[in-house]
Image 1 (cartoon, rainbow, N blue to C red):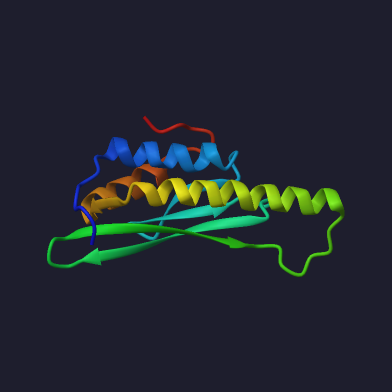
Image 2: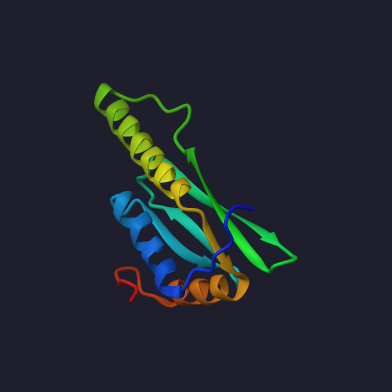
Length: 128
């Protein structure tokens, strides 16, 4: 694992805000399961993102890895539709590239707290 550093809850909230802002709100970070975090694409999103959590059981630190996927395979689109899909793919690729530049490493407790806090927010509520 690369440099092991813990993230504060504030840094994880900043990560949430970055994902939602840079995807123009088409990707929403949500709490799923009792102690995990998911990224939920909006119904009109052509691409999506997900999080893999790799736990180092010796240190107790979790490394979060982000990936993207194309949701609308096999759909016949106009030129404008193709441009819109290409734009979303580029947007998510840029976001993933930015996330890869600074690895996200947190304790399991921090991730649980993050999941609980974002799971309790209302759809339009910003995290503080």
